Each structure stands twice: as structure tokens, then as C-alpha cells.
Amino acid sequence: MDGRNSLPTRLALFGAVAGLCVVGMIPQAFAQVIEIGPAGVSTISGPAITTPDGVKAIEKPAAPKSARHAEAALLFEKAGGEVELSPRLLEAVAYVESRFNSKALSPKGAQGMMQLMPQTAAELGVDPANPEENVRGGADYLRRMVIMFGNNIQLALAAYNAGPSAVLRYGGVPPYAETQAYVAAVMDYLATTSRPETD
Image 1 (cartoon, helix red, strand yellow):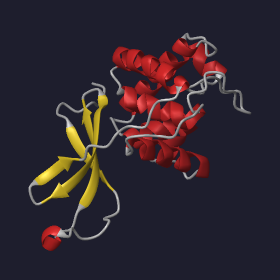
Image 2 (image 1 turned 60 degrees about the vertical axis):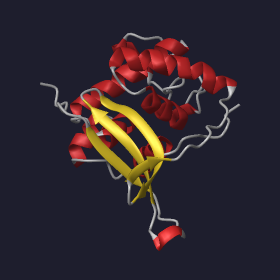
Image 3 (image 1 turned 30 degrees about the vertical axis):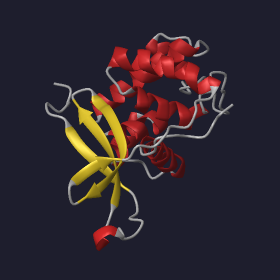
Image 4 (image 1 turned 135 degrees about the vertical axis):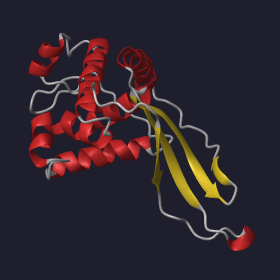
């Protein structure tokens, strides 16, 4: 038993209410809907608007992808399919970690698009300098965190950033400014339909 739910759960991330709808003076609430099923985050739709007739999607053109983003998207699709994680979730992590830069190197030694530490990459059996293996390794590690923390995406993200032992020690997102900002940034990315160019 890996703690995964048997039925999908719908979560709505609500933003600020812009005001009252002129037609009928009905309040409008904007929402971003995330589907969480047996394989974690599976569908992210929206934005949507809540009206008296229910939740309706708002058609919004996506920003054009940069060359770096377009190439990375193929890697997210492949790795996401292999580990049963949403490619959009992998995209969000890679954006926050490195802005899709496969040559990124942190002061602590984390490498590549998914910012894998050398020891973690070795344990996962991937070459962090190889973009495809880096994304696959990051996806595999994140999937392990999703399972470990019972499909709680925020805790899985916190564990990806600070390590699972820190999440277990604090019984939630650790009180580290970096980790809290990291989790918020990834969740914010998931709640939007587009991001600025990175090239």
C-alpha cells in the first residue's frame, strides 16, 4: 500500500475575487482546478470562473513557449508518462528550480534542469548532466516523495527541496524561508496558464 487515493480528488485553488459581476450583481470567483488521482496530480485545468450555473472554463491564450521551454516540454511528457506524474507538475518544478536551464549549477552543487544533487543522481542511476536523464531522475524522485507523503503535493514539493527527513521532523512544510517560498512558487506556477519567456 503506497498511500495513493483510489478515487480522484478535486481541489480548487481560489484567487481573489475581482468584484461583483455587472450582470445581476453576482460575485465571481476565479478558480484553478487540479485533479489528484491514484498517480498524483493528473490534470490541471483552468482558469475557471464560478457562476450560478457552475464552474466554467475561461479560454485564455497560452504564452508562446521559448525554445528552451519547448524542448523541455517533450522531456516532461516522456518522464511524466514513465512515473505517472503530471508533466505540468514536472514543468512547474523545473521552472522554479532552473527556468528550464539544463546547464544550471547551484552553489550547493545541484545540477541541471531538475537540480539534482550528485548523490541523489547516483542513487537514482542517472547522469545529471544529461537533460533527459536529469528530468527522468527528478521525476522519479518527486514521484517517490508523492508516494511517501500520501499524495500531498505540497509536502512532496517540500521534501524535494529540503529532504524528506525535514518534512517528517516538522510534520509538514519545514519553517525554512527557502522551502516555504519554493513550495509557494511551484503551486503558483500550477495555478497559472502561462509563464514568461526564459530565453
